[in-house]
Image (cartoon, rainbow, N blue to C red):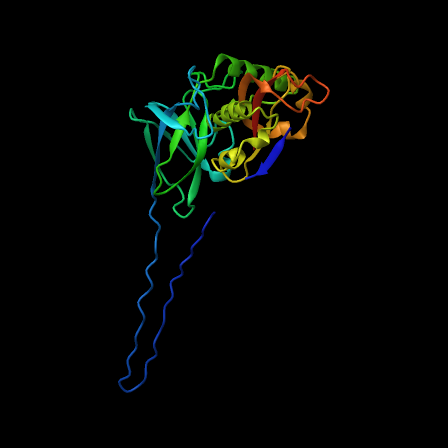
Length: 292
């Protein structure tokens, strides 16, 4: 089953104006209005914090998401690279020509100078590492984080690790993409959180449809820059990457930049398995694909 969701620049120009006066013979005078001062926008400071993901949405072995699970901040991440891009470019991979670059301090904080003071908002891509492996994570083993930042806000960006099963899922998916000449898809922290949450909530409900996870897609989509689209599918009794080779030919697959794959969970029997035995346990998994 698949679902799709669709997910400012401000220019201000001030012109100076002036006036003139005339003179008269026999003692007349002249006057000139003072010029209107030009207002120059002052670059603002953009900042935020990068931390490791903790709590039930993380890859910790004891993590078990539930309906009220939210991101929890773990230890600060020092030395991560923060790329500033246009807000609509926050869905891209590691940028080759960012607007600005910063490195996180020991407490995880970063600051950047706004390059275009009247722009309003920018995209942020956080990477702890220099490259992305075939397993979808950075060469330091972390997922990527991205979103939107604007002056006066201090957002928190989460980085996480993947379980061995999740890494295997990315490896299988990227191997299928490689056969079609498509680039490696990166593991995204927010997508991974949603994949884990979706799987556990569907399993807990004994349902076969991820549509029963309330507000999951809306909350996921809103954490991205303008233009994000998410697709999710779950269910079935076969390994969750078994049909990927047949999916790679789909047009949408060419635009996938980030993803989240949650390893399979065997849960309560599904009541609407059709001709199959409704008493058999249902295997649940989530596949979250983020399109550029």
